[in-house]
Length: 183
Image (cartoon, rainbow, N blue to C red; front, side, top):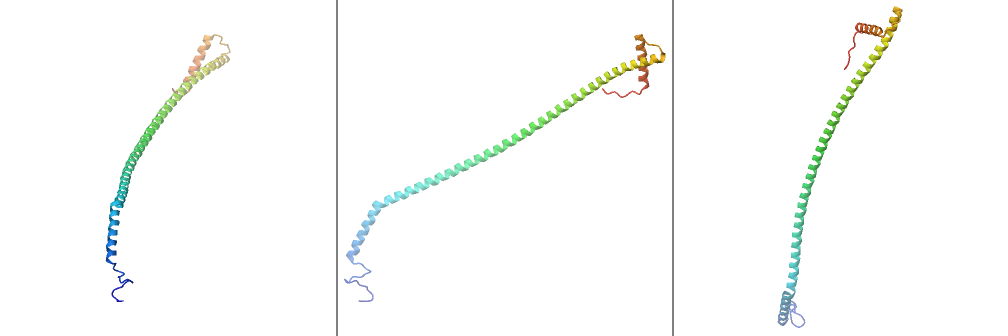
């Protein structure tokens, strides 16, 4: 055997096939390649195209979903801002209403207090007048008794007794300092 060529047992080279094997192998390869190209390749490409189309539709659907979510978020944010504005308006109205209620309550309290004070003044004046009348009558009786004891005679004449009593009270009122009277 030679060192440059490796030969098989029949004198053929192991690395280089015989010409009929090379021709028939090439023909078989071309037949298999053409049948794959004609039969399997279109199905494979259709499957790939279908998958690419599904992926593209999925991407478009995802983009549409993202856009819809963004729109919904924007709508929600706008609703939240509106809710905050509405809540602020409600708080302002409630504060204004509370202030109005407080003002009304204060004015009613002042009015009630003024009425109570006026009623108290009237009652005091009426009680003072009643006390003056009672005191005047009692003083009149005491003055008549005193005059009767001083004079030593009974004042049976009612007109005379009344005049003596009135004169005595007038002198008594003139001699005592007058107290300030409240209306």
